[in-house]
Length: 251
Image (cartoon, rainbow, N blue to C red):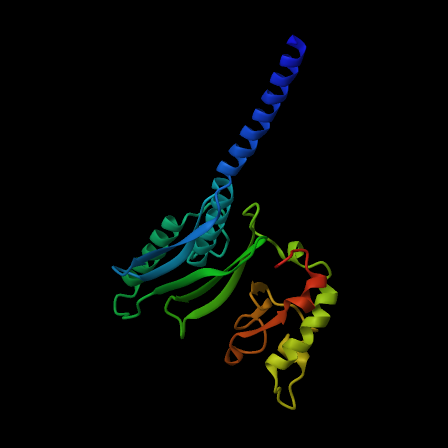
């Protein structure tokens, strides 16, 4: 009888242990969400920045937030080199100080520097988060410079995904992307070839590949192809067509 009681107690202890582990995991697994953050400073340079802040799982949200904030910081960093340790507050102060130094050197100038950045979660699934960043900087040139960047995150880790983490076969992916590019950039003039769009090179994928509910977005920023007048070139490849060449599942 004692042996039966001991076995029953052992089974109960095992069951209780498993239950506590599962309960603990469920409790610690906090769903990821995003809140809108904004910064606006107009005392010297005009600086307006909006961005999504991840909340929920501590490790995942920390990875995402550090990456987003450091990327935004380097968008207004006046140094030519990327600073992986630069904080957003430091970058804002640095941009403002550079403008004040400019005003000291050119006191007659009425030019006000601007840094306008808008960013938001463009797409989110069980596996991936795509954040779109629209940046505009005007530091006294003939015109300001604007560009769009996609930041793709692994939703399970919060790590930033590189192109090789997304596409299985880049050459094969080029083959399905090229007809969409040609459709988006037509009509070309009679004396302009596709190679002219890529400065004498063959068709290339853009620096920016993102996602939306319709599929995979390919976006060429100003000066990435053709001339400034061409503007941004953007098109979407439906997910069903792109799926065989992706390492991630959008569904």
